[in-house]
Length: 137
Image (cartoon, rainbow, N blue to C red):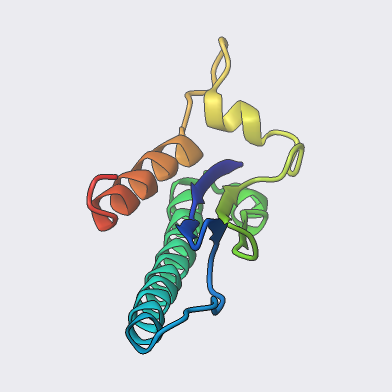
């Protein structure tokens, strides 16, 4: 499985958080804090959408490069997304030992099986796309 994680939080009022309200004290502070929180919420939502799309692209790339004999490798490509905390995470690829021969196909063997590097190539491609989307950060 390929794992990609991005830490997203910000400091506002001395505490780290995402989303949320705050306790502004004046009319200027109310408008400014509302603007800042709204902007940060929208940027987080865009980041979650970008990560979700990247996970689906990664899964599709792994399926496209998978070798087909019975179709089992293609059907067992999985992906997950965890967006509930300040660390946003996606994974894609095969679960451990499902199918059992996936690591041998992915990395090859000394005698006969050429490495296909499907997850490796998809990980590099998705990471490059996300990096470009985030402005190289």
